[in-house]
Length: 264
Image (tube, rainbow, N blue to C red; front, side, top):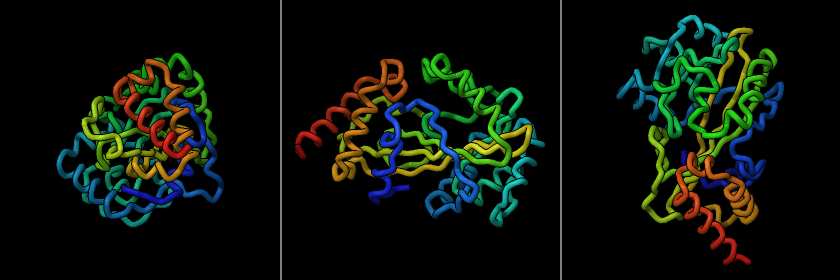
């Protein structure tokens, strides 16, 4: 979902915290919007993913878990898919994941815009196994994350942000891009707004919406560049490996430092 508005850069996740892998939940607020209407790009991507490979995008281990979604108000949607979570996902911008609170297992999901992961690898697994590919994350904050998720208050939303770097604006990225051969100024910054909402005592919703912008546009936002540099510099070797490897990390950091030097 390309965007070149200043708001993208001034409110970017790395401007709020330099710790890319921290939880950093913020309350959504009593009048906050949990889910949003999809735009044309988001809707087209969902249609493509659900049509081309339904099982890759939709997995339901516990059909009853989908009933928990009924506590939210939904826009009108067409019931053309065999799973209700897929039909509801077509009515909103976000991908939808339902976790079972008791053991924090992912039990139902419709994911059409993943960032370097596959739903078929995550379904049925608890949160610590889902986070296992991020080397060191469980050791650093696994217990805190699990405690936070189990104790989210009922019917209240919280948001956090994540960010990644891709080679294009495609919404669906199943494989990690460890080497981007194109020039750095053609890369794409991708931000994920992740919403956590305790639907019932037994189930919580994890919803994800993507924004993206051409990396080159950050050159007009010096403070955002400086904050992104700090976030990259703070990464340890394990986080750099998960981010995409040393080469990708260093190319991005060097390009940002070059832009900042030009403006000095």
